[in-house]
Image (cartoon, rainbow, N blue to C red):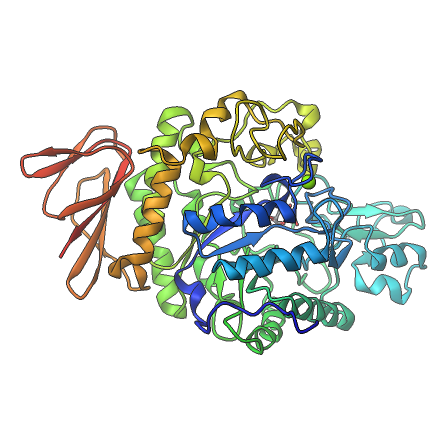
Amino acid sequence: MTASTPSPLTSDADWWRSAVVYQVYVRSFADSDGDGIGDLQGIRERLPYLRDLGVDALWLTPFYTSPMVDGGYDVADYRDVDPMFGTLGDFEAMITDAHALGLRIIVDLVPNHTSDQHPWFQAALAAAPGAAERARYLFADGRGEDGAQPPNDWESIFGGPAWTRIDDGQWYLHLFDPTQPDLNWRHREVRAEFEDVLRFWLDRGVDGFRIDVAHGMIKADGLPDVGFSSMTTGRRQSELLGKGRLPYFDQDEVHDIYRTWRPILDSYPGGRMAVAEAWAETPQRLARYIGPDELHQAFSFDFLDATWSADSFRKVIDTALGESTIVGAPTTWVLSNHDRQRHVTRYGDGEVGLRRARAAALLMLALPGCAYLYQGEELGLPEVLDLPDELRQDPAFLRTGESRDGCRVPIPWSGDLAPYGFGPAGSALSWLPAPATWQSLSVAAQAGVPGSTLELYRAALRIRHTHPALAGVGGITWRQTGPDVLAFHREVDSVVLTCVVNTGDSPVLIDGYGTPLVASAPLTERDGGHLLPGDTAAWFERR
Ligand code: GLC
Ligand code: MG
């Protein structure tokens, strides 16, 4: 790198502990050149919007050279930008501007597998069975007569067998699409390569990494059979829980990798961090990914999976906070991402879903720890359920009938015509079509409008950043409440902030928590207290 290396913002090495991170699904955020695909220059142009929203950092999904079979999670060159997203120069300009605005940048690292177009895999295909070029992946001979059966019974997370046979008769492993061959993480060169890739992006000023499939890199010795089918149902890896540890997930040896990465991150100034997308059987095992010698965070997907009830939220919050106390690291909350149905829709869709989603946002943003927002949730976007099949691009769709495209529809920014300002003026292109109902959900339609979801997020983020009780990472105290009501407070120097969520449908009287600071739906004063409507959350302050 040259002398222009962007420097991290402050020396606050612990910035990530209570940060709000905004996930940018690059392909669908903002399109600067009118090709219908979001790009780095588009992000750069929208940075002021994100600063004004009040987030601390962005997580960018993969923008590396890729045939885009799995939306860029199939990387062909880990050190370059795909032309559809721009150039390395665009990345450098974007990160320089982001830092100047006080926004940190987290990039996605995809270490479990490469694209089949990666030079290493191409070399492996060109080489003979047993050649050194094949050793960087997981090639094996098949079973049965002529080796016509896969080497074991493992299934791809995208459906079908996890093995594909090539012309010379050998098979290779792919936990995801056949175009995403799994790397052999017991190979010295694989480890060295990714250590170098980490440095490549750290040298360019990135503040952190989101580690894709962080629990998957090590496979059990001998590649043993699992012994039952539907081991990973569609994309819902959480359904694995309780079935016993799979030989390709959460193997103890995976922690060696993170123990080698941590000193690399720590050798850079400014608090460079990493967050694991990891799935483990128990919260205890998930917590092992976090700590001073491994990663900084792991998404708490149990929170995302919680159903709309006070009881369900309270359980997952207690478990997550309990684990975080043990490992001495904050919890990492998330309600939506590019792999899961948007939470407006998960909570019932339509008006009810939106009410609940707004309330859930206030719940999440009042909790101690780091929160990840997914682009468009600040607009209250629902899942697009009726995309025509022929437009769906998720590789899992063809194999399982389940598709993640509905949460990846381009963001509506402004205007009356689809795709609502996603591209430059006059551009009608977008790689997935936005529904007509999104005109009224655009940024321009909501900005400055009291009560809009965008203004709710802006208000909550402003309070979160400035309120003494929310600024820190201190714990929560539950309050005594009814069955449909969740209430907890956080307190600093006798300033008490109470978050109350009514998950039922009838209003409840809230008394004694002080002045309301923000609410997801209007409160009415009653008998010296406040009526909190159904499916609503509010923050109260007492000094
Ligand atoms: C992660 C990503 C997902 C991708 C998969 C394979 O789960 O979030 O989008 O399909 O890994 O890389
Ligand atoms: Mg573009």
